[in-house]
Image (cartoon, rainbow, N blue to C red; front, side, top):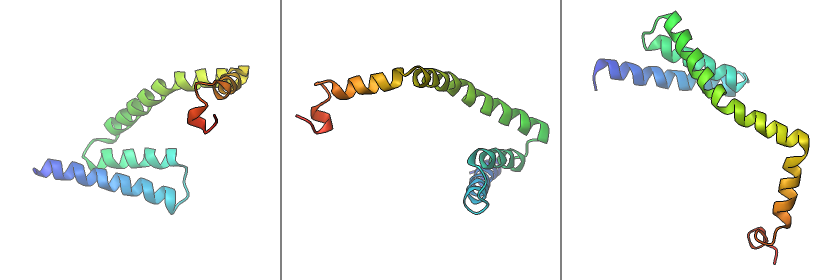
Length: 103
């Protein structure tokens, strides 16, 4: 491994350990701890603060943007009562009975 690769692996390990320690020992919310870990990885990898902030912002934005639609649709199903109706229909369906232990 080259020096740059070792530095990146080390930065990643430190970021992971930092996030885990903040969650377990510091009782910090996991979202905040993961953000701090991501900043630590970027800074330890040698990125300037502005570039690290942009990279973290883009990564979080991509993840939240991708899951936001799924969460919104799930919330609409829940609030309309459709989720309960779907679950009830699935549980009463004879096709699912063998998998649920009913005969």
